[in-house]
Image (cartoon, rainbow over all chains, first blue to last red; front, side, top):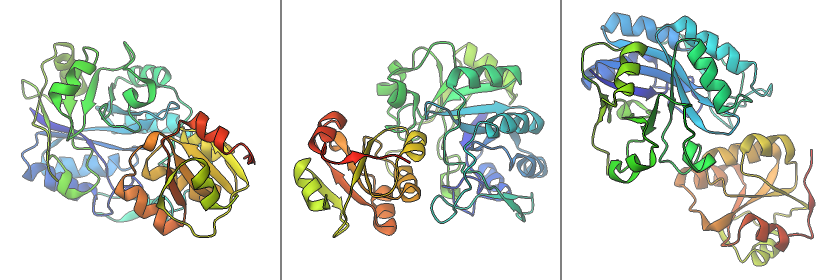
Length: 242
Length: 111
């Protein structure tokens, strides 16, 4: 089972507007992925469209978001169902600044249908952190039956290591390396957690350029949790050029 | 304080210039939500947060110039955004504390 757990759609202000769920799915299938996860900043509002597109294309999908916590650390919350991802979104939205997004400053945030029609422009500033801490978020994700992954821990900004100096024990189910991270250098710094590598794609060319693989043919929270617990993930080589 | 005076005081290197820019206030912060909540107009932001989003937050807050400490490198997308949004970027070998001392004649920024 080969998958890319960290993909942004057009809802993320920093992502390309070409990142409609249907195009993401098409690209992931082309790249040979068995599963993907949609993880926009602070919101799962494009997950209903993604669920429909994934169903049409016959690719497995997890639903969630990239939560920017109170510590300004990027983390992935992943769920089997769109409903749980949307419940998580409501909980994050309650703790977001009430300031209205300025698309000229941060970027557009369209909520779309499976046919790429714009339904609404999200008004919150999804590029900003929320008031939920990492431990609070971990607890909420678990209560909704999800997985919690520390995102791009090798990055110099917005990662748990850059922000907090180390990866806290017991908060995460796995940690993610970015597409360029040197595994030999970074795996020793992952505190014994299972390691995944994902694309963090913000444009179509980057979808599934790197991936993670686990044994078996099930792509679900339970299957990933079991593989993480047994440290059975293998990751693709890093990218050394773009 | 004019930008060129500020650059001299922090022994800085101008990465993005804003000719004639003048600052009256200063704020130190690395968490962007904190910067957005507390940093106001006519300010210089002293930070290590060398990221594109720093420019967006500074644009909303009315920050004139950013001092990036420890000579952290400025990513190309951050530099481009600063040029577009007309926010000066200065890098300094100093820490945030040293830069704040060097600019101590400015007043604390507040909203």
